[in-house]
Amino acid sequence: MKNGVNIRLTKAPADLRACARIMAGTEPWKTLGRDYKACLRAVTAPLREVYAAKENSRPLGFIVLQMTGTFKGYIQILCVAPKARGLGVGTSLMLFAENRIFRESPNVFICVSLFNKGARRLYGRLGYKKIGVLKDFISKGFDELLLRKTLGPLNGFRPR
Image 1 (cartoon, rainbow, N blue to C red):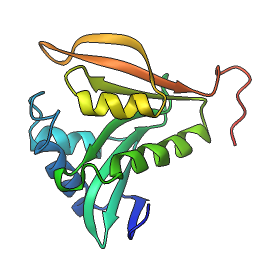
Image 2: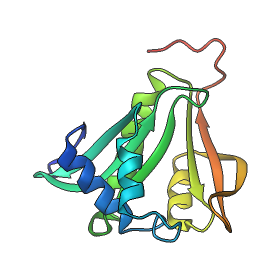
Image 3: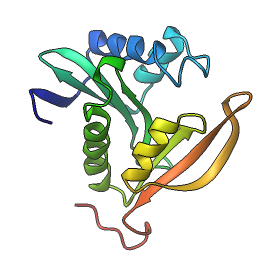
Image 4: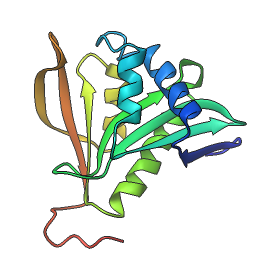
């Protein structure tokens, strides 16, 4: 990204705590009832890759990838700090994640809350297609849409 923003893999406890604070204070997680402790568990879970977007060491957002299991290439969390929204941070994080995932898998998966219209627009602009609805997935009364962007089927895919 331009203007001194860097996206890097992080395991630093201070970075993970900052990610959890940003997440707990923003939508859709507030509506879904995710407090700081739940957000911290999400960003520190085993087998996750957390990539932080920073500008001059100031956290702007982050993305969490799951690169194992049936849905290898699942974007578990995309979160942009409110002050950084509309500046291209979310798009940059998504493109970074796609590049990372497409090296190992032909599919990128992500869930988005049905009520999260801004995120749905972003994912649609990036070519994601709805493949299913998960009723009451995170919280009762709130549905998640499962989205996918693909280069093709698993059979015949050659990692880069």
